[in-house]
Amino acid sequence: MKKALTRLGVRPESIKRAAIAMYEAEINAVIHAHGGMAIVSIYPDNVKIEIVDHGPGIPDVDQAMKEGFSTAPDTAREMGFGAGMGLPNMKKHADSLEIETKVGVGTKVIMNIKF
Amino acid sequence: MGKLHSVTLNRELCVGCTNCIKGCPTEAIRVRDGKAVIDETRCIDCGECIRICPHHAKSAVTDSFPDLASLHADHPCVALVPPSLYAQFGPPATRAMIICAMYSLGFDYVYEVALGAAASSARTKEILDQKRELAKTLPPEEAAAIFPMISSACPVVVRLIQMKYKALIPHLVPLDAPMEITARFARAEVSRKTGLDPENIRIYFLSPCPSKRSATLNPLGHKKSEVDFVLGIHEVYPLLLNMLEKSLSVAAAENKQPPLCSLAESSGVQWASAGGEAATLDTEKYMAVDGIHNVISILEEIENEQLPDIEFVEPSCCFGGCIGGPLVVANPFSARARMRGFVRATQEERKEKPDTFMKPDMMDPHIWDVPLSENNSMRLDENIETALGKYEQMEKLLETLPGLDCGACGAPTCAALAEDIVQGNALETDCIIKLKEHIRRVAREINILDL
Image (cartoon, rainbow over all chains, first blue to last red):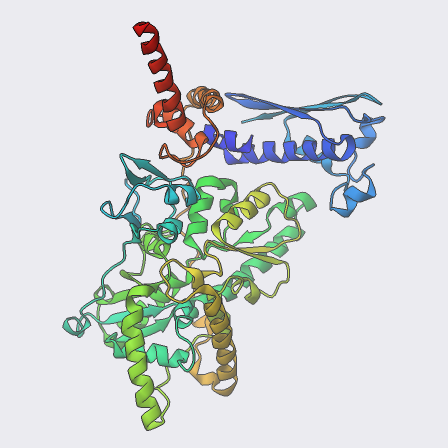
């Protein structure tokens, strides 16, 4: 995605925001759901990033949005992840963040970054 | 408007193979009509193609060695010698001997670029301190985002950032390179000593790489370079070696030391090896990364904010740092070992004869006064909607290409060919696999007609 946005001549600040937001969402999907699917749609004035997984879901979204709150396993923490900054970082860098989640079914994160 | 480059192609030697297009980190080369063509807007003068070309068709344009005897008097010639030059010679040659040999070649004044490097180190330390102070006043996330600072000593890295990592431009140390700092100082000092107009002084820099010459033609962060001519170390090497051998035998015969010159601190000398600059900054939170492809992956990480806790990054395009430049003679491994010897000798000399050393605060490194421009050559089109259309076309085309990345079409990868086709610079049948399919189809159709 980053490469594509660069080729399209998107401002570096916007590319950076999109790249960080997407990276955090991907890491979450990998840590909690052992992977998922990313759909990136680029429009002339914004990019929409959807990350869909079939993991455990988020029981309390408000709690998950709090900085420092993390349910990441120790194995992820040992690798420097799971500091509880993923969702807050996504919220900070994206212009909009929607989370559709169902415990035991999975999570869909939809972010939008304006150029 | 055209950019000025040092890396160039000798069309006669080029056989149109795919070595250079594959090694180019910015995909700036294509083979067209059997010869390599460099896209000047994308070339960052790293010199990878010079190293890789088996036919020596790529070279760096440098200035030719001056006829020093005919100049002189009202046009004094100043040589700026970088610390990477020392590493071309092993013991018993010392730094003082190498500098004296430069004088013997006919230069009127010789200045160590390590002087400017030491001054830059001192100034960079102050800038880092200022950043740390600033960070204390900011919320933690913003504070983290102002680091790491990135060294601007390697012009290739600066140009790469201008093109592919524009968000990192504010992270660059905004100081003139040691070559410029030393040149400015030398011009002023020689003018003072001789009473001549500074414009009459000719400043020659001995370069380990093509990018330093490009930086004099197309300056970074300032309007005009203080360096007038750039000589490749590989071209001066034989002359210098000859002179050193002569002076060594003379010194041995007469058992006397060569005359001393005003010397640079070890903090400047050690810049020649990768990590040498960073190690002078009194922080352990630094990272030194060498080799252009490694540099690319680290810049990527910095841009994605994946390198917390690092205050300073020293990227060098060449493996080993400047001692691994494309225009040096010694291999970077011996050079690195020798550099350690030169640094240690400098430290010992500094203890014994502190008066012969120049204090780093004698020079004042200039802060960049011309903002770095962005290089938009990666952009598919000025208009984002047109660019989007082209990008979609490229993706569709890419699916139809074989994905071998063989380079036979003249582009380094299938994706690069797809781009060239969309931009109107290549044809689908430039792909030999596609061409084969095409011919087979035509042949089949002819067969059907025959029946």
